[in-house]
Amino acid sequence: MWHSYWDRNPNAFLAISTNPINSVVPFASTLLYEYYCYNPFKIMGITHIDSARSRSFAANALQVNPRQIQIPVIGGHSTETTVPLFSNLTPCHYSIDSCQADMLTRLVRKAGTEVVNYKYGRGSSVVGLAWSINEFVDNILNAINGTEDIVHCYSANPHFGTRYFSGPTVIGPYGITQTCCDFSMSDYESFMLNSSVASLNHDIEVGENYVQVMQHTGRQ
Image (cartoon, rainbow, N blue to C red; front, side):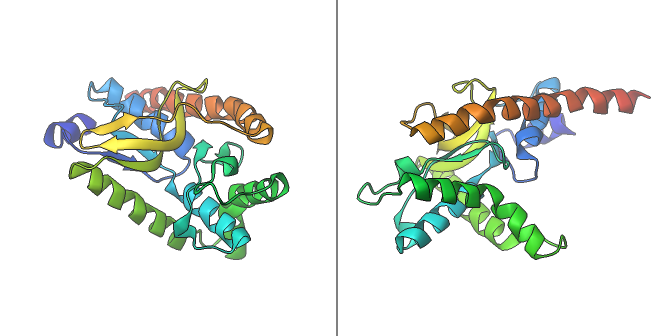
């Protein structure tokens, strides 16, 4: 199936929004590699929702329009691995102090769970997710049409001690042109990032190993 998919759509982008993204993207990548059609520049997990939530919470604290600010969010897409970099908030005339950053980080990390709890387990944050995917797709379309754009996505990235990593990523007509690789961070953000690496590597290993489980099951 996968081989046929890429034969028919060699220029397609494969964007995944299904949780757990930290494991599903490595799983899909490993499976595509098994079928000799893996393109690390065109497969990504959509983590735009983390950026949207960070902007929304920060904008509320600053009493500004969330469209007026940008906040990079790095790491992965889970409670233990999402690391919003409020110290990198732009425009730079806005600022979030350390106490606010701690509170807002907790809100961002728990936002998905809080929505599920609010709906008593019968739903999730579908509206916010739909909005962030729409913004992500708009940026992808800009890139396909020839204008490089930035999206928040989880993709192959070896710069942080893991094989996959999420963050602001430059996209062009042929896929990823530059993954995130360097940020100035506060001590708090550095601590969170260092703490997230073990969880990220575990999630990645789970996804990669599941390909073998699936193939072994299929042979029985």
